[in-house]
Amino acid sequence: IRGQVSAETGLHIGVAGSSLDPSATDSPVIRDAAGRPFIPGSSFKGAFRAHVEGLVRGLNRSTLSACDPLADACVPNKKQNDKLGIEELKDEAEREATEDGRLNRVKYDEILTEKIVSRSCDICKVFGSPWLASHVMIKDLLVDPEWWVGRVELRDGVGIDRDTETARQGVKYDFEVVPASTRFDLEIVVENADDELLGLLAIGLR
Image (cartoon, rainbow, N blue to C red; front, side, top):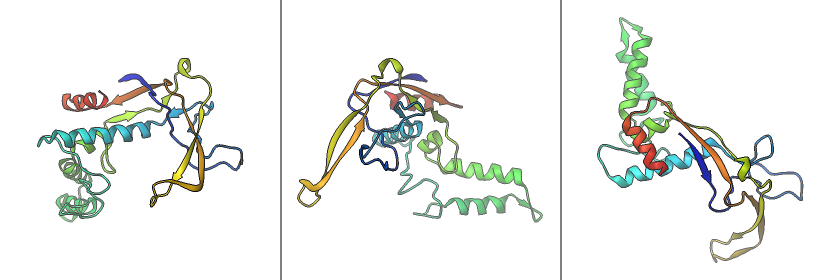
C-alpha cells in the first residue's frame, strides 16, 4: 500500500535526549542522516494500531476483538485475570509434546503456536505482539522533497500548573515543528493478508 501523508497542521515528533548547545531548541524534531525530518514507521504504526483498536471496540462485534496490550493483554507475561501467561502456555506445550520422556521440539512449536494464536485478539494477530510476528510492516515515512521547504518552524510553549491551571512561572520552552502541508511518502507492506485483514486496514486508513 503506497500513498502520502500530508501534515494538516505543524507536526512535531521529537528526538530523545537534549543538546549541550545552550542556543539549541529544547525539543527538536527527529531527522534523517541528511538532516530532513521524517516520521518513524514505528511511530506511525503505533498510532495506526491504536486507531484500529478503537474502531474494533466501537463496532462491538463478537467476531472481532481488541485487547489492551498494556493493562489487559490477551496473552500476558504471567497469569493474569484468569488468563494463562506465556510461561504457563510453554509449560503446557512442553507436557503435551513430551513422549516417552523426550521432548518433540517440532510438536512443541506447533502446540505452543496454536495456543498463542487461539488466545490472541484480532488486533494482535494483525499488528503483532511479543509472541506473534506482525502481518504489517510500515517503513519510515521520508519527506517528499517537492513539498519540503528546507526548514522547520520554532514555536514557544509554557508549562501548566496542574493546581491553578495557569501558566507556571519560569517554565517556558520552545520546540520545532514541521510546517503544515509538508508531505511524507507512506509505504505499508502486508504479508499473508486475508480479506478480513485487508478490510480492517482499509477502514483504519480511511
